[in-house]
Length: 247
Image (cartoon, rainbow, N blue to C red):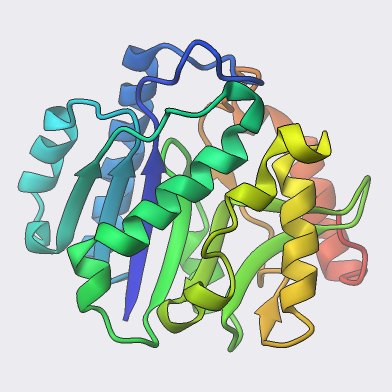
């Protein structure tokens, strides 16, 4: 069994750092477009259930209306809570991990899933165009994350996966460790250290079968991922010719 977990913040606080895409109307529209895409993939059978978790206690009626039209509506769940009562200096990685923690503790669909169920987490405003290939091509592991070595050691947070049974020993409680005010660097750098530590004692996939292909508008600079076409193409080519080079 597999569950897609979409994380969201419709109304980010004014203290949020490194965030250009801050208008709640724009963000809600982004989430609606992405949700419609993933509902279609769920109806095609790519995953079994969808959990949408939002941490600004926003009104999700527009999104729920989309889900209500789905043939799989009984396996779509929405959770909205207020989880922004922390300083902006903690960083968005801290908030993201708090959303994940809330979902793992409060989602009825996740609670009902078997221990070996896969949880695939995607930042909810983004469309992962090759999600099917990433899921179908995944190796046997307990934790999945796309890691990079160049230009620095880094673990992408927009798409990750873990076995339900492995969560307690991998990402549970990780929010505190990713606080940017404590170590003065991006949460993704600290997450990479955590991923490497876990890889010493359990099966961890630090690269996906293909380069993730994202569509949507980046939060930190309001630019479309499609504008990074050259960078993505380079990663694809190097992934085929020199898979040991992680960029």
